[in-house]
Amino acid sequence: MTENNNYFIVKKKALPEVLLKVVEAKRLLEADKNMTKQEAMNRVGISRSSYYKYKDDIMPFRENLQGKTITFMIIMEDIPGLLSEVLKVIADYQASILTILQAIPVNGVASLTISVDVLSPGTDIQDMVATIEHLEGICELKLLSRE
Image (cartoon, rainbow, N blue to C red; front, side, top):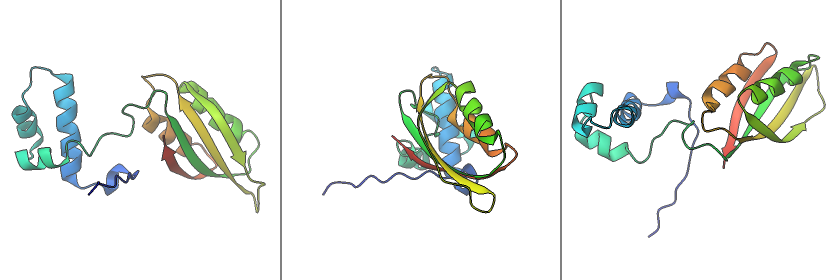
């Protein structure tokens, strides 16, 4: 029987604490090559069984994104210059825009779907998304895919 791998994008606040601790233990191990797995598990306060159960199935969204395509949908107010601000944020994070699909605004609100190519290994997609989300006039931002 083959395993069907399904992927989900979940906000941090929705994750159980154990999964966040596994991610932190992995980060500690990556940062300090001399640290043992047991030391990392002890530091974050998880059991060996929890670490090994989830270690291959949880990773921060920003990992391994260089050369990947990220697609997100934005619901935004119809404010002159707001799209320009969104595009500037994307450029500031060294991501290249592949496609933009904008619907005609209805009742002062437009929906926008953008696909971007992550060019730099240092690009933090989480920060980019958060920066866009906090622009005045952005009503909602949803990540649709990561390829």
